[in-house]
Length: 164
Image (cartoon, rainbow, N blue to C red; front, side, top):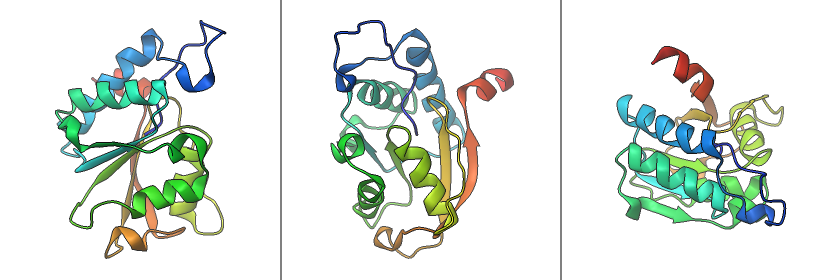
């Protein structure tokens, strides 16, 4: 999941400290409710600790009725690179069927694309608050690597608003 729409209103804030704007505060819980309604609640959530990602995670997971104790904050999802996103996935509890990463562009798009497309990156466009579900037949999270996944579905707030 890419974080929801953030505010640029206060130019004095560091990028890390930018909060969600009004649309972001509406979209995040709507996407969480979608996750709950389709039965895709994650067993663990790994999120960037940047303010806009934290707010997205908290609002969406509250609406999804996911226990807040299942949220893990990972600084590398803000400061790192694609390898750090993949390492976060690989660090998931081996007993979990489903996890959710909440991150930032371009890394979240690039990671989804490389996981679904091997060395030839698949283009994945993720507007704010977008969800992309990747499916893998890997035996364990450690086995997740470029080209080991396929895109199962994607949902964006604009489309969800039209169908609900």
